[in-house]
Image (tube, rainbow, N blue to C red; front, side):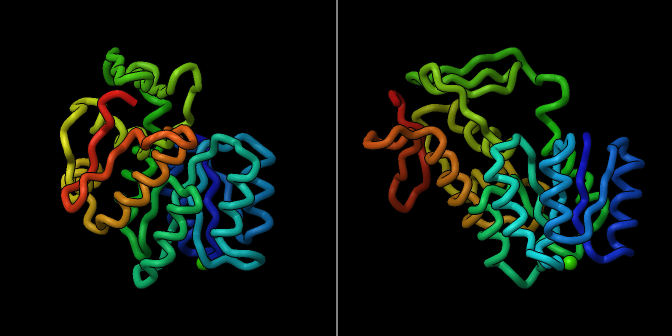
Length: 225
Ligand code: CA
């Protein structure tokens, strides 16, 4: 993948970019907010690894400026461990995933792999259809009626859980475990944000949501959206 690394700490930037290059990625580095936006939107870029605290303006501002361009760039945010609010804010602003500092390089590479999944071989040639919602596993495409939907890899994974077993209720904990099984920093708030993001993309105004909340249990896919 073409990766833009936005990190103002030179030592960390060098370590991370070396690891990414060794893993076969092409890496460009930006060290401040304005530089990051310019590089993310001005040249070919599949993924931005984005630090929150940056000179110029911060990672959230960079994220919102990238999202405003509607370019299909994936964003992995690097947040401080103590700042739960940062993580929530980042996901709400459209980050595809987050990693808290300090992190192990292997963990970063694993997250980058997840975010790059759309570029690798399809897993199975199955198409799930529930009502007018359609999920093509081979092409990794989702559509509602004739409207194609742009889902991030994580959003895709969450929706997939529901599409495979429509009519079943999943608790927040179960969704958490299925998506973030090997990662220890998840929490159920993360699931809530992903459900919110999916509803925003899937639902039609004025209609019942595709994903129903089952009070004090979890979520279920509406069987006939
Ligand atoms: Ca920083």
